[in-house]
Image (cartoon, rainbow, N blue to C red; front, side, top):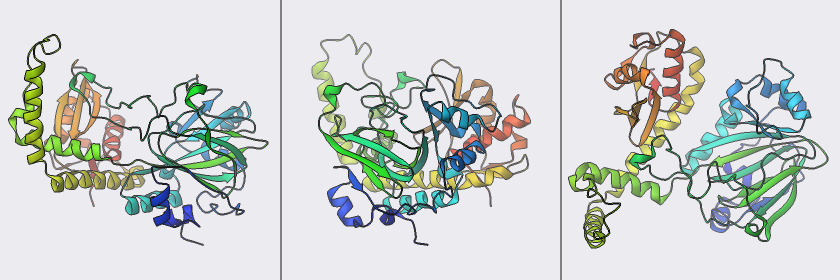
Length: 402
């Protein structure tokens, strides 16, 4: 069996050629007459086998999109539920499918090691003559690996060059911590025909084919005369804006002036423009002198390593019990939402929010280097304690001790 890594996905193109000519620039379509090329990533010979595997996964992992997009995407306990939804025209999506299949997990981890960016995989199973999403763009780099059947893909030039996946949070934005530059949820709002332009890709993908789409490229896909299954490998890049944001926060901790509030009444003071401009220029100059590139890279890198370690620890969560020893992964701080209804645990720029009743447990976690779930204080059931610490492990705040 050939080693399935990034170079295998884009062969016969070389890695150097791909990054020079396509990465963040233009799509790449690779059509092969190799229907078994990706068979080792997901051991399923037909669509029914894929649906049976998906039916065994946790309910929260599986979503219904397409015709049933408007209903609550929950499955009854019946093992035939997904088949029924699929037959009625729904696309079945498994988000984060690498969590459940070791070959996909190893592929994503190998891409992370090679490229230095978080990588996740989604699985799509679409009925014949149907499509899941309408025309949209993604805010991350996408590699499509076609597994079964055929599917027509249309992709158009980007209307938003390299759209942002995240932008820094402002204090008054509350829980709206994730904001896209133009459209929420990966740009899946309605897009008019005038925004499309000339297709950059118009092709039918079959088993063994690969399609690379830079973030921002409009696209849609529709199964043709047979059911189809494909994987998307999402590469969530770290941008220069991200690195500068880390450096700016680091400077903010060192210099009190960056932490001062804007002048009272700044929204309504029409005479303060020159004062604002002068102070803004002064602080910008201060930041340009003080910014620590090496320190920002170190903090961003450590944060990603913690996240990757947390992801690899998910496989151990099935054995989590009230006596499992847990360790914190860094300096934790407790915070409250503006309305006082939520308590948060902050690790660097990442915040884990819970209802206010979890505040005693969050404070307990922040004050200790290690503990067991049974020790958590507050009015939390034993079951909730395990769910609570499991989420903290998954999000990189805690790790299971050796």
